[in-house]
Image (cartoon, rainbow, N blue to C red):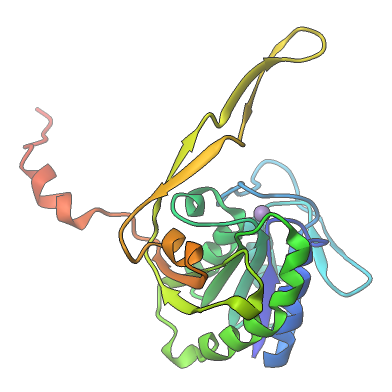
Length: 250
Ligand code: MN
């Protein structure tokens, strides 16, 4: 099996190393990842300047672009063979609820799905990335079930979140839906040292809501959360209602 690993935290990130090491048990692993931090770049494409790819000493390829750029370049130009599966992460931080709309980690898996390649995004909910190291054996176990590609759903990626606990204490795996994240005070308005106003997005307090099977509930209760995601954002239930608005021109 040919496995492409990427991420959004950059090719030096701890989580990418743990993921690629776990993947080695299942086939030939290639790494094509951003050369720097690209978190929260979502599905950004670099269209207005050239992209450069460089090979690191360990054979990994780093690209001065986004996770989406990496997957497109890897599949279209850089790899000798099309990968059978794309793994993204392990992200240093959660990707639950609306996070998946901003995440570069999930975006790399989304791009693979767009290209018709099965893909799985992994994210660690804890704050200390070094703790990801202990997850290697469990990731290998998860992959051995997930990489049965004959049953992998089409047009769907899996988003896996790992709870911030000792892997030995994990209660199991739950298949989940996306919860809803509520940010409070996550926008800062302040003045820089020269007196100019600036804004900073991020930080603040977050709270969650969502049904029984939500991702954040599984994480809070000590389970690994696996959310199947598809790319069709159409709200099918509302199509008839919106048709009844009688939208027309002339
Ligand atoms: Mn990240």
